[in-house]
Image (cartoon, rainbow, N blue to C red; front, top):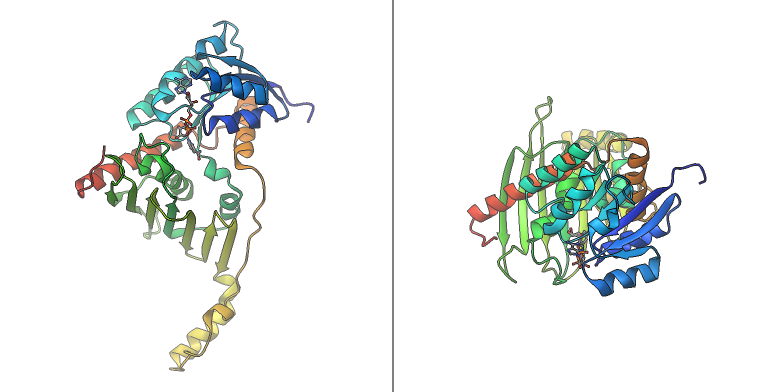
Length: 348
Ligand SMILES: NC(=O)c1ccc[n+]([C@@H]2O[C@H](COP(=O)([O-])OP(=O)(O)OC[C@H]3O[C@@H](n4cnc5c(N)ncnc54)[C@H](O)[C@@H]3O)[C@@H](O)[C@H]2O)c1
């Protein structure tokens, strides 16, 4: 790794997430880790002590001179409500930003961030890191997926963090982005319900999203559940596709695939025997089907995301999760919250 352009990188906001971004940059080839910005003095000093670079109190200090900014690319991991005020001066100066998910607290603010990036001609990527999770990469590499039904479950015990936003913007947003990735569109119809327990913001939500057909008249339905009041951690994705069934467990790091084509003979035999009126109740269906287990890598998703972001900075490649993708997830989240409010939940 000698002939890649060295980029000067920094992190703004080094709390729970930002400290991992700092570690990743400090250990990455082709990166000159400039340092971190955090309004908390002890925190910013602790992080540079661990991972190097300089500690800055403000973004302006980090940027230095307007004519010759001291950074090329910055990851922003402040609480979501500060994303715009932190990102704007960077993006408008043409400095690339990887902004943690969700891009903004509202679609309106997300549009203002996108506008700043456009004005400065800066690369903007949104940190929907689950797309880089090896489990999701294994799912995405399955050929010919045409989802008709998607089920997503994201359940965690209460951490008492990010309680400034509800579970839709905090957790479900990951799955809303995966739906953008899998369907390429925003839902045409939404039904949702939510429950608040700890405060005003919703802690549990279930949404049923309909995606319009794309020429074949079939479309796709997604059933998405998120809870931060679970008794265990569960991250599951199931896809019923026209030609296959996929089941992914992000906690166990495991993917199961059943292809129709791989089971064509068994299915033909069963159909024929059923049509002839044969009693098949003694057959063990699970023993009969051919199940594949696509390989799941062990790469670090945050590192893959940072590498891909910096590749866009170096080459001008469109970011994998661009401002439009980040905004789509927020628009859908807002529609879910509106629908759930209408259904009687006490939301913010
Ligand atoms: N990708 C994921 O899986 C994931 C997980 C958790 C959080 N997040 C996202 O990461 C972001 C940060 O969340 P967190 O849990 O790390 O928050 P946190 O509160 O632990 O850390 C935020 C840090 O930002 C600093 N800060 C706040 N305002 C600032 C400002 N204006 N300028 C400089 N520093 C500032 C705080 O002092 C703190 O150190 C949020 O957008 C959140 O949604 C993403």
